[in-house]
Length: 147
Image (cartoon, rainbow, N blue to C red):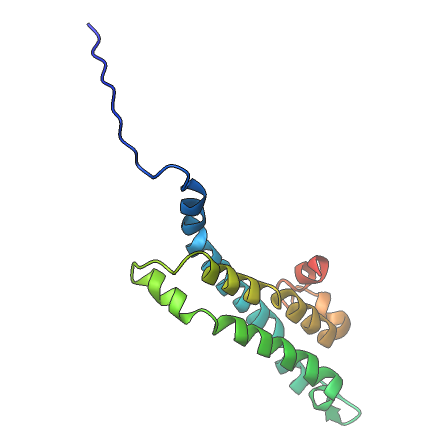
């Protein structure tokens, strides 16, 4: 004996699937933005700034040269601006709320991911030939290949 039932239950509203998909991607967008800032600042700009302070050529650190300072400062400012774009969005997601639409996480992802690789590229250029060594900048060769 076979018993069949017809159930008419809709889990989501029709024609709203794409919107639900975008809302489901919001946490990943914010995570990718945080990874990009960490990669750009941690592996890129901060290591390059430390190296520029330590590396002495002709009796003075190379970090005193504007050709080194300005690109690193620009990368740092772009990464900071991207990071501070999304505190409300991160707070809403962490407390169980929803950000207002998918635009805020998309903006944060864009403004954090875009300057991450140029920041790493500038770090590799600051290190010169040593920038391609995995010992000097973990991920430096990876960053240089991606740029």
